Length: 517
Ligand SMILES: Cc1cc2nc3c(=O)[nH]c(=O)nc-3n(C[C@H](O)[C@H](O)[C@H](O)COP(=O)(O)OP(=O)(O)OC[C@H]3O[C@@H](n4cnc5c(N)ncnc54)[C@H](O)[C@@H]3O)c2cc1C
Image 1 (cartoon, rainbow, N blue to C red):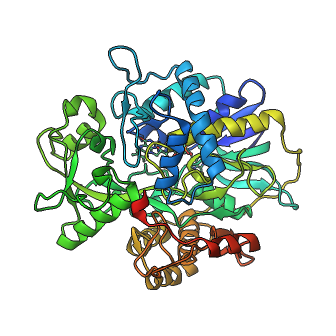
Image 2 (cartoon, rainbow, N blue to C red):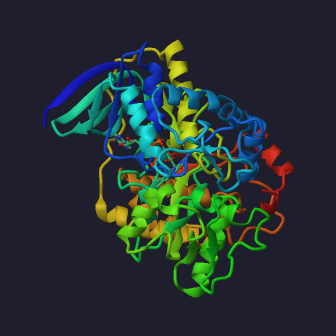
Image 3 (cartoon, rainbow, N blue to C red):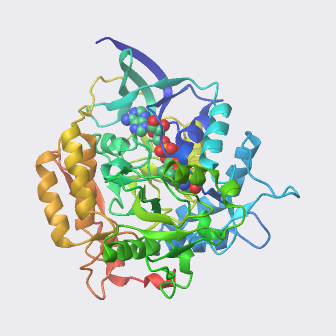
């Protein structure tokens, strides 16, 4: 197979909101290339983008909601950047051509979602926000060269600095030398059996970062969306039913028709996602049906306002305006990821991460609805700004990380294990079982590598935190310091000892109750 060589200042891996926001910020000053391989989650985003930009709202209120949903595990500085810079980046998105929904008087139309105390979620074409974000950013970056190829390894010098990447295109291997590699590869959906994410989202950026020696953090904090459509399929990709429907009055009901969230949380159906997902999981398990009902029949003009959900329902023989919808939780989002600073830098020189693949600390224990597109806009611009000011030193060495190799049968086993033992409810016994099955499978298959890293992180946090719920959580548990994972000398993901200062701080804090959210 032939190998082509390219050289640029910055290569961005991923063409979702995070990758394209980064490329947009770099386009005028740097020689940038975007490499992507199929569809990420951005184009599928439904509910919208959260941003505090009305007189009755403020970045401080948005930050408070973000931290409460995050179970007080967010990095407050990272959250402040998100909420303060968010409205500015949203305005730039509109200036770049994004058409958001508006009221008849021209004001932006804003909806309410779980965990928000203000109507601050802007959207496009009702529930097709991601498609409009992707369209607008693609148009705004039309001049930036793109390569359709799958990145399978990173160029790396003997000193450990990343100096480019290796990808597989339809024409063969391409080696791209670059002063900076920005991973914007999204989440890890298909490391699980049932997920709302598109098929190509399977944690490859996390695997590439691990193989380059980067530290990942908060991997145990995997968010499950409470309302994926229960299609009857054993797993795979499940259509999302946006939370914005509940913001407009849709209710969750148990199979007898009783309101599911009554008395469970003071925000009822609009409680943070982890709380609602656990209630749906519990009720669906109790009846053995695997689902509860979502009743959106009283939402005015529901089919026109939620065309994406209406179309998914119709595909499965359901009428959004007339039928109760069977819904079930499914893997949706990774709150942790590759550890980064406020400018996207990882602990490997030359390697950056942004968007869902990155752990900036903004999401804490559980992401607040509609904060992810916002994170891509805000942190994409920050990564670009850092690289406009300064590029890492050039490195011309020829080494590389081991290349990713797919093993479909291994990936299938991993997904079964993740669903069985690393889902909404976890226990020490289940995680030990998962670790024993996955350990011999860890090699260069990205799904196995990432699955094993999530299991290691989950086992290292014995107490419940946000969306990491342990059925065997000690009663008055203190908080384990932030869990950080890196590959050890044998190539297995292993948990790093916490810095001494983090241990002391964690000893001093105890877990606040979920009802504080
Ligand atoms: C159904 C659904 C609805 C959602 N609704 C909302 C919402 O309303 N609001 C909100 O804030 N968030 C929402 N989210 C979450 C949000 O969409 C994602 O977190 C966000 O879009 C992630 O953006 P990203 O740019 O980080 O990654 P993605 O958009 O996932 O893009 C990843 C990119 O990386 C590329 N890639 C991956 N691996 C490789 C590789 N090895 N080589 C080359 N390229 C690679 C892919 O081709 C893709 O271009 C939703 C998610 C889903 C699945």
